[in-house]
Image 1: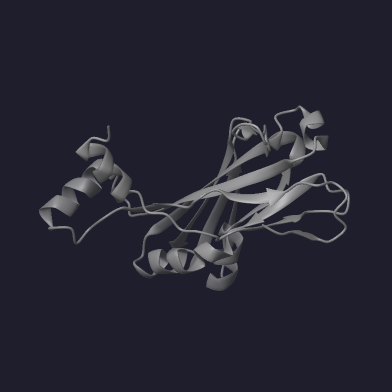
Image 2 (image 1 turned 90 degrees about the vertical axis):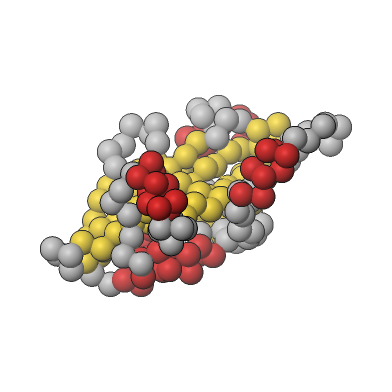
Length: 198
């Protein structure tokens, strides 16, 4: 039985389909770069309203199971963010791949277009990291990568105050959050092309 609250919750979750492309980061095929170019209009719209945009990318390695549901390893994630710095008159882009023992990176990029392109990419994500150390799973037939993103557009206020502001202003101030569907990409090791098609 589906309760009315469940239906409302399902309607409230926005989704975007097909925003990703995935390609090998090097000829050794040990890491991939995920490009979320399809999210560029949403990031641009967020920056136009002088707000910070964050993109949380989630990745999981899965294997097809013809007799049952696909089996997937727990998801790994990374976070990219972009905002305009009025002091340096450049866009500050930060990138962090969670649980990878590498410090987050931060850079100032004067060009708006280059900054948006940079925040939409998660570069050189190691396959070993995605497989959580068990590289044998990458050699199994039917192995593929799933990717999705959650895009949030927020100001300096936290979510509680943003929601209060939205109520007090009859919805004119809002924290926008959008989640994409999972996109699937082949991880077949004998691919000689530079890109993996969805």
